[in-house]
Amino acid sequence: MNHAPAQERARRIVTPEQVEAFQRDGVVCLRGLLTPDEVQRLARGIDANLAAPSPRALVASRPEDPGFFIEDFCNWQDNADYRATAVDTALPLAAARLMQSRTARLYHDHMLTKEPGTRTPTPWHQDQPYYNVDGLQNISFWIPVDPVSRAATLEFVAGSHRGPWLMPRSFMSSQAKWFPEGSLADLPDIEADRGAFPILGWALEPGDMVAFHMLTLHASGGADRRRRVFSLRYLGDDATHAPRRWKTSPDFPGLAEQLAAGAPMDHPLFPLVVDDEAR
Image (tube, rainbow, N blue to C red; front, top):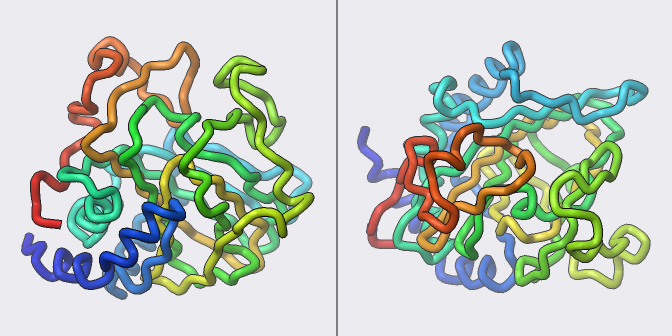
């Protein structure tokens, strides 16, 4: 496949100013990084995933919620539309440019769909403490295929990617299932004093997305309309394997026996999608 048009789009949209903003704030909004055809292909992949969720799928809304929130993970190998989005679009080069990394390696995909009327919020959290990776060069793309209002969008605390790591908890029960209780500081109560935090968020149209560091604090509210979102995570030069004594989210069964602690994430599960390409 000819990737030149996608690479040119990445270079045009991911400007030096955007790179500077990502490094400073831990998040940027990228307008029109996917073409209408690419959005349509991704929507087709999400609909196929919704029609046949994998064994890794999770319902993240409560039974009494009038809407419905479902997530699914790690389906790029079986879903050709997901795979094409992750590999054949402007996303890999955009990831490398924003991370200021020579390489970009696909980490995993994550589908998140909130049906209309869903009240269950996504609470404030960082992503990296749930994962099995260490390193500063990483990035997540949050890519809606439906219009997202400012009220329903993902919000971020600018600069929070600089740390510290904060206690990851289960969204439904607030349990510390990962790091032992007390080993990391708890999140501040951001909603109790929103004005005290530099909160960023953007209304988005299909083709737009937000790109954020895996340590950037983020959250979202319910859904005022259907909100199908696809998230892709990429790793940069300094990413290394960090096996945990607990089940990470997502989980990679058997990986600890194949990849040593501290090793680069060089494994077929995490294909290299950019290598030494001019950023």
